[in-house]
Every structure is written in structure tokens, then in C-alpha cells.
Length: 271
Ligand SMILES: *[C@@H]1O[C@H](CO)[C@@H](O)[C@H](O)[C@H]1NC(C)=O
Image (cartoon, rainbow, N blue to C red; front, side):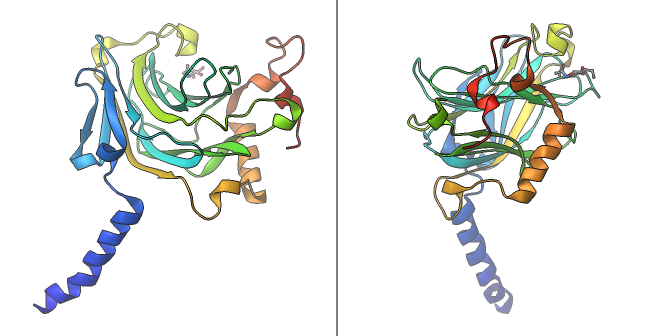
């Protein structure tokens, strides 16, 4: 009896934590959209897995749309020889003038690095690729990939470290996504015509099915701090560190691609 009474505060705490952080909510927040059984929500909503075999990939999307937010998800990518596979995780609106904020993970041979590919589309126009290596093995464990999207900026984070910032430069004539609500989408598919070393390394189907896993989704759509959140000095330093040491492609420095001059957002530093 005594023991039971002692447990009550713990139970209450767990119940309220559950309400605040909504653990195990993947069933509530997402629906499987394709893949004919290859995508699954498991452990009563705590885990989602996507898989890919020769016949098909798979995918899911959020039930809700979001207009601004801080969206966190933990992903564990296809391990081993994942060459040719792409795990896309992104926000997107609909229509021909859509907005989109992308993370894409390009697989590789065992032991060779994944590429984290990012892009931002506003009103149907993208071409803003930046690519990174990661400072850890993204297949060994879950890591948190986040998108902070507010009216002033979009920030991509990996485990809380900012890797890319796209500022609202509408005042300079650069369209910024801020009117169209977006859904979260993810898919695992075969892109061996381009993904690994530019398409040189093909998917090894003897390793199929390939599986990527998701957990601990959280979307903060309001709350103190985030609507105007910007990078403080320490975060700026982290961002510089990633860009200096892990960025392998930046459209803003690709002179061959933009012989007529770089896109406006590349040459402007003020907000
Ligand atoms: C795969 O590994 C090769 C060799 O290390 C590297 O050049 C390439 O960037 C890696 N990633 C992808 C997705 O091709």
C-alpha cells in the first residue's frame, strides 16, 4: 500500500510529461502514404520505419499542415551499403508556386560518408543546394534533424547544431516562404541514377530491404522564444564550424553554375 502511494506522484508526472511532449505520437501525427506495407508505424506509435526493395520504396506524410514552427525528428538512416538510396525528409506546400524546405540523405557504400543535401524552394523556385558531410555515422544511432521556420528565417539543425540559415530577404527581392502552410513528407527511394558519386555507384539489391527509422517527432508551433528565434553568437560560431569543415557544396560559390552572377541571397549579408 505504502509503495503504491509512493508511486502516485511518479505516475502523475509521467502522465503530464506525456501530455506536454506527446511521446509515441507517430500514429496521431502521420499517415503512411505509399509503399504497400513497406512503411510501418510500430511500438504503439513510437517508431516509424520506411523500407525499400527492388519493387518499391515507401513514404509517409503529416496529417497536419504547419505555417511556421520548430519541427524535430530523430532519424536513423539505412546502414551498411546504402549506395543508391535516398531518404528524403522535407516540408512542402502544394501547387505550382510551392514552397519547400528539404533534407535529403544520399546513401553510400559501407564506411563511406552519406551526403546531407539541403534546399529551399520559394514560390516554385529552388536551385539553392547546400551539401554536407556529417560529423558522426548517421546509421549507428538516431540523431535529431530540425527545421526552424519563422517569418524571418529558416534554420536547419543537426543535433541542435545549426548547419544552414536562409534569411528572409524579401526587402532585397528574394521571395521567402511565409504564406503557404506545409506538410511534412518523407520517403525512401532508389535514386542510383544520381545519388552516390553522381550515379556511378548503383544500388546493391542483394542488400535489400533497406530500412530507415524515425522517432521522437515534435512540432512546436507556438511558445516563448521560437517565433523570433535567431542565432546567438555561440550558434553562429557552430554554424561557421560546420560550414567550414563539413560543407562540400554551396550553390552560392558555384561560379560555373551562375556565370551571370550569383542569386541575390548569396551576395547580401543583411536581413
Ligand atoms: C561517398 O563516398 C565517396 C568517397 O568517399 C565520396 O566522394 C562521396 O561524396 C560519398 N557520398 C555520396 C553520397 O556519394
